[in-house]
Amino acid sequence: MDSEIPLFIKMNANDNTAIIVNTRGLMKGAKFLCGLTLIEQIPQGHKVALYDIHVGEEIIRYGEVIGYAKDLIKKGSWIKESLINMPTPPKLDSLPFSTNLKKVEPLEEDFTFLGYRNSDGSVGTKNLLGITTSVQCVAGVLEYATNRIKEDLLPKFPNVDGVIALNHNYGCGVAINAPDAEIPIRTIRNLANHPNFGGEVMIVGLGCEKIVPTQLNNGNNNDNILTLQNENGFSNMIDSILAMAEQRLNRLNNRKREVCPISELVIGVQCGGSDAFSGVTANPSLGHTTDLLIRAGATVLFSEVTEVRDAIHLLTPRAENEEVGQALIREMKWYDEYLKRGKADRSANPSPGNKLGGLSNVVEKSLGSIVKSGTLPIVDVLAPGEKVKKKGLIFAATPASDFVCGTLQLASGIHLQVFTTGRGTPYNLTVAPVLKVSTRNELQDQWHDLIDINAGKIAIGESSIQDVGWEIFKNILDVASGTKQTWADKWGIQNDLALFNPSPVT
Image (tube, rainbow, N blue to C red; front, side):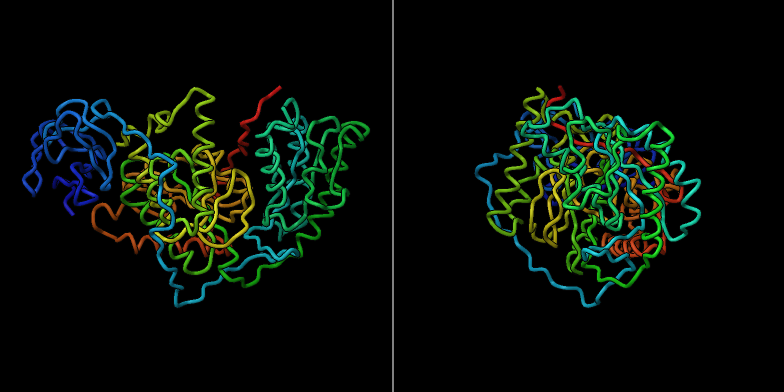
């Protein structure tokens, strides 16, 4: 397709806005096939007014109100953020539940992947030695020990994919009995028991911290806990950590992949570095993938409360029952109060980069974000860091921060995360691979060795949402089976864990 032909995308018949497709944007005077002429220059991804929008009138995208005009916005002009008043968020106490429930039609084919079966019945997609900490004080010692494990021990255990130190900044100097302290504590506990660690829990503590290491042990006996204050000097600390690690590496090395049903997979979906194309290409494609995964029997977690809050009226009708609907409301209310305590509001999202990519406010961002969840019923809601309990589509409440959301989804038990991006980010998780999907061809071209799948071809008509959705689905199975590696894993990119701690620091 000739890239010089002026192109826009209108998402819904009721929209009075559209976004510019052309890579370099369009100059004043550009004329579309429908007869619309631009009266000013508009960058790629930004909104053009399809009709005159008068003061106080609705600005509509995705068939939903994203704001109200502060001034007259003339047909063919750029709808800038400064011209939009945000609407009030949906009221939480009068939303309908379970009024839009689609039947889950199973896929005709039975899908499988190659995973590591654990003794507790769970399945891993990697074979890792994970070493958790009960307090940040031991992180330096553990980093030294981890490097020694990589150099001295791992070469003897070729079936083990690696060793990961689950360092964090919690454990002491905190109000351990505060109501919200349960969030970081259960997050650390659930991270230590991630299925990719094969049940070989190993905990390094200091000895005087507020979190007692046994709190993280999930019912195991305490021979997997090492306390540094009980050791005679640094060298003994390292030797003891290596000895404990070698015992576990011996057992992990005997693990073998076996055929497992797709129903054992837990997939997280997230977006970051979003732009105006996120809700047009990558997120709808991922939403189709989500539906395919649920129909195949897998579990999918979607998250990011601040990017759900303004579209919650579109999600409660998909709650499987009133209990799930009330749980969605509970998490929205909790976060409203959390932001209020910090004297912040939802306008703090989106980021400057999101705005450069054409997103004017969090309402527009939310409407494009929630389509990652597909169309099927929501069967459960998890508070931050809670472990998955059901199979199907689940809302896992998290902040929108990429790193915090990723950490909490890991604690909930995801085996792999699919991450859509329009602006680009090299982000990757330490425990599970991150499959990156670009919203635009330009990002795929620029980051050809970081982007795994390109959904940008949808915007110019070279592919369909369904085609890219199936492409993501098949890549998930390949990566989960270890037969394909994401670019971020290939380069060894790893972001630090980022705990969500809304409780006081003392």
